[in-house]
Length: 146
Length: 146
DNA sequence: GTATTCACGACCAATTCAGTCGACATTGTA
DNA sequence: TACAATGTCGACTGAATTGGTCGTGAATAC
Picture 1 (cartoon, rainbow over the protein chains, first blue to last red):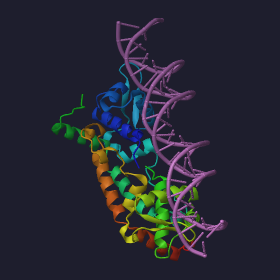
Picture 2 (tube, rainbow over the protein chains, first blue to last red):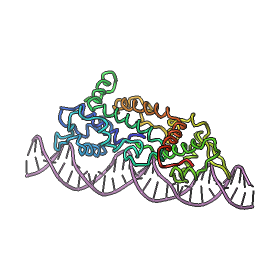
Picture 3 (cartoon, rainbow over the protein chains, first blue to last red):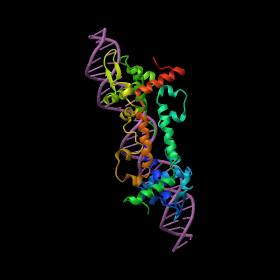
Picture 4 (cartoon, rainbow over the protein chains, first blue to last red):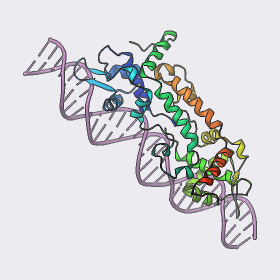
C-alpha cells in the first residue's frame, strides 16, 4: 500500500515550485538538492508533471521549471493521480467490473475508504502544502526555504 | 497503492472459512475453487495465516482448515496487516523518523487518511464480511455457498 | 499400508522500481 | 557566432517484489 517514491518525490518537487511561485524558473539541480531527490530521476518526474499540465519548463541559461497554474488550483489528488496512476486499493473500484463483488467480498469496505481518501486529497491544495511547510519552518530548526 | 493479491486472496479465503464456521475443516482445494485462487499459491497464504494465529489446520483425510478463533474476534485490519505487512502509505507514518516531516511535507495529510483507514478496517469483523456476503447472495444470481 | 490431506522450501518468469547515462535541443550572453 | 547553461528524451540496468509452480515429505483416517 506504499506510495511509490514517484508520488512522494513528485509532490515534494511541486511543493518546492509552489514555494518559489512568482520568482521565475527554479532549476532541477536546486530542487533535487533541497528535496533530496536524485537529479536524473527528478528529470523523469518533471517530464511527467509537464505532460500532465502541472509544470512549465524553460530551456537555456536562467531556465528551469515553474508551476503551469496557480498553486491554489492544484490539488494533491490530481497531482498524485498524474504521478502514480489510480490510487484505488482494489482494481474493481475503478474498473467496476460486474460480478467482482461476489468473489472479492470486501469492496464495500474499501469503496468507502477510497472515497474518503480521495475527498481528503482533493481538499488539499499545493498552496496549502507550501503554506503548511512555511508554518512548520517558523517553529523548527531545519530550513529549506533558500 | 494497490492491495496485493496476497491481501485480497487471503481475505477471500478467510471469508470462506468464516462462512463454514462450525462445519469442520474446509479443504484448500475447495477454497481455491470457490474463490478463484491458484491452489498452490493459496498454500502459502494459509501458512502465513496459520503462523499469524488466524487459522488452524488439520492433516489427513477429512482434514482442512478452520478459523483459529471466532469470526467476530477477527478484524479486517489485523488480517490485512498479517498478510501485507504495514498498510501505511508512507514509510514515515510507521517509523516516525524525526526530521522526516521537514523534507516530505505531506505526512500530515496522509497521517489522517491512514488513521481513518485503520479505524474503518478495525471496525469490520470477519463475521460482518461473511454476513454481508450472505446478504448479497439473497438478492444476486451468483452463489458460492456450497 | 495406502490414500488423502496439509507443510515447507526451492525455484522461476515477469514486472516494477528506482534509478543512470548519453546524445540532443534550446537559448541567453560574450 | 561560439559557447555555456539548461532542459528533453530514450535506452539501459540492477534489485526487489509479485505471483506464482513443483516436488518432497509428514500426519492421519481408514
